[in-house]
Amino acid sequence: MRVTVDIVLFTIRDRRLHVLLIRRLVKPHAGEQALPGGFVHDNESLDAAAERELREETGVRKVYLEQLYTFGQPKRDSRGRVITVAYYALVPDTQTLCAGTDATDAEWYPIDNLPSLAFDHAEIIGCAHERLRNKLDYSSVGFELLPTKFTLTELQLVHEAILGEVLDKRNFRRQILQKGRVKPLKEWRNTGRKPAQLYSFCG
Amino acid sequence: MRVTVDIVLFTIRDRRLHVLLIRRLVKPHAGEQALPGGFVHDNESLDAAAERELREETGVRKVYLEQLYTFGQPKRDSRGRVITVAYYALVPDTQTLCAGTDATDAEWYPIDNLPSLAFDHAEIIGCAHERLRNKLDYSSVGFELLPTKFTLTELQLVHEAILGEVLDKRNFRRQILQKGRVKPLKEWRNTGRKPAQLYSFCG
DNA sequence: ACAAAAGTGTTCCATATACACCCATGT
DNA sequence: ACATGGGTGTATATGGAACACTTTTGT
Image 1 (cartoon, chains in turn orange, brown, purple, cyan):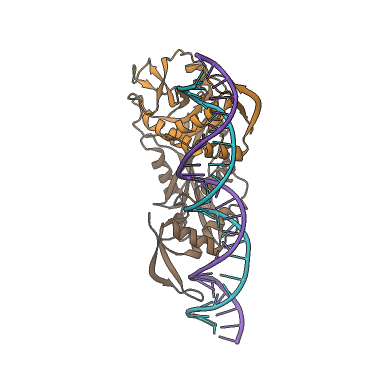
Image 2: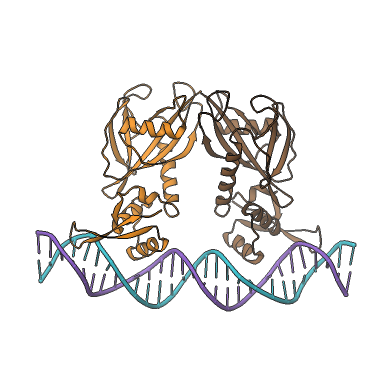
């Protein structure tokens, strides 16, 4: 029995939640779009395999990474019995990507407009999106999609992209500040019109 | 790479949360206590493997069963690389158990007084308990530990056993009834003193 | 009669929600 | 001056938490 890891890498671009997909170069499903991932090596943990595959196929390092679910239907891979341990990962939009050797054309797709996908990867993405939505208000996942310094409006846009609904600005800010997980900096970002105060995440 | 499933089977006995453990007959860790589980067959899904192992090793069927997490540290099994997909399962105390062929001495242990365990099974149980606690108030896991007809006091004892704290009777009953997931029956249980009304779970 | 568990309401506090205007800046 | 996004407060509704006594039955 063979074991792979697949990673649903999320980011926010243009106010929408996006997922990174690669175009497979090898069989099966060559030419189709799929999640980054690959076989787990004999001497590495599952977490390490997910990190490595993400690095190899997308150039992404040091991201938030969390195990999601293990998919093991007998017929899910035509090569024989392959189960996959799915992960999801979060990066700010600022990271640059580079395609690796097993894959090419790593590209971001908005989660509400995905192409058809290899294997059971569409199901995996659905499962990852649900997890992300659920963890948004009791964990730090919202911050992992932003750079270390961010404005509260940027944070709100992240929440809106994940939840797929618009939030009230005043209520959002009050709730975030009450939770005490952000601290205001003495810096302002003066892009646009009125400068916006920057905040950083604190544990 | 080999793949097993392990199952944390919970029940409530004597107002306390218990876990079923077996005594291993084969190496490695022969003679030690462990979770029921075993290798996934080539043509069965992970869920089916968990169901089968539970049936073979404990005689339990048709229980609530949910995938928990996949544990894959390289050194977790001395036989070589074995990853395990952990499940947890819930049965009412009324089910009878019978030990199977790979295992013997299937026995219930209170979760706050476990013996030392084979492999990383202590960690798996901790993870299962946490999941159970978290799902208690937004899912139906509380009902899966009871027979189809139960009194509200019995349901409260289940919640108290899982959470490890005593709850206020009036608040508990109001909350349960408000959620609308139980319906009162026109039956009363007249064990003890004053008869208690029976309820059943409705999706 | 009494022991034992069943059943039942109200008050208070904290948090969620709905809602609209002024401010600071760049063009 | 004006367009743009930044920033702020209040009133109401809802859900959670604390709290004690009466009822029904078997012995």
